[in-house]
Amino acid sequence: MQDFLAYLTVSLLVLGCAPSLPEGNDRTDNLSLGLADLANFPIGGAINEGRVRDDTALLAIVNEEFNSLTATNDMKMYSIARGPGALDFTLPDAFVDFAEKHGKRVFGHTLIWHYGFPQHLEDLEPQGAEEFIQSYIDTVVTRYRGRVDGWDVVNEAMATRGGELRETPWLEKIGKDYIPMAFRAARRADPEAKLFINDFNTERDTAKLNGLLHLVREMQADGVPIDGIGFQMHIRMDTDEELIGRSLAQAAETGLLIHLSEVDIIFNRHDDTQGGGEQIVDEITPELLEAQAEKYERLAELYRENVPPAQRYGITFWSFTDRDTWINGFFNLKDWPTLYDEQLRKKPAYDGFARGLQE
Ligand code: XIL
View 1 (cartoon, rainbow, N blue to C red):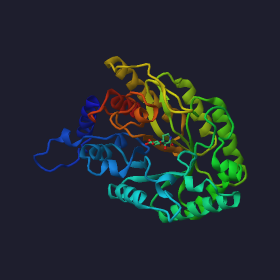
View 2 (view 1 turned 90 degrees about the vertical axis):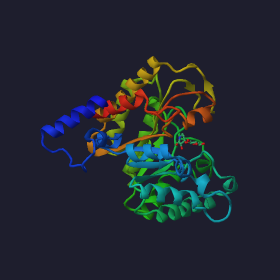
View 3 (view 1 turned 180 degrees about the vertical axis):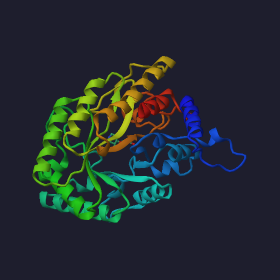
View 4 (view 1 turned 180 degrees about the horizontal axis):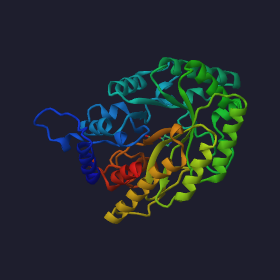
């Protein structure tokens, strides 16, 4: 990074286009480029508004590094349709206001998901479930029309492993049609918003990717409005890189936007069917941090190598510090999967990723 800054400073001076700075300013100090400046596609982070509101260090990272934001939980159905009464927009309103105030692209996550399915909806009959999906999506997407750039319309539609649909309450009540139904409702509510289907392990589970792409192609053939595919990309240190590249290329063949929507790189073995997992790395070492940096570098390269520029919706990091990572709490592990350490200092992973954006 330092080398790059020095290089950039020299190049700008040589080209005679050094930015004019107020007197007394040290040029190199002012040329601190964040990840979003280095990339030719958006770079995002996932946060909850309440987490970042009073945390100046976290806020500085958000402002310096990202030009896109996703709400970790603030825009989920379990945050909005908390109880049987009216929808509660306290959290998503605060999030969208925050993101706009800081000039970020707002990405909506997520409209329909099985996880955290609100209890008060459990007794809905098929007809009631359809009506709920349509009116929920209509209300939420209309509320943020023109402000939210894109939505994960359906999250984790595929079973954890293999190519079948996940058995969710929505599938049980409505059948397979809940998916096109959700996309159509979102398009009606905001014709401009980019509509994504988002899932995990599709970069490494070929059967799952094939199942997802089959569904996507069916939707395309039926004229269902879909604009993008999200790869959550909660990968591990041993996730095969060539396989990631092939999977991205295969998804890009649909012509849709490709979003790496929730990136982190995990040392341990999390169990993605049930929470929990196996702690295989107890202590982080400089060697491991360097290996992780290389993996982050490679991931940025793989995205650029396999996704054509016009299809790059961006790369988003999920709760992007080792202090706040969801991996530790959710899987009851101790891990170090992000770009920032527990003191919010940049890790080698940060520099690796920055390299991968530029090479
Ligand atoms: C996670 C959040 O990080 C946690 O705070 C929450 O308890 C559960 O959800 N896939 C997704 C995200 O699409 O919404 C999940 O986020 C992580 C896995």
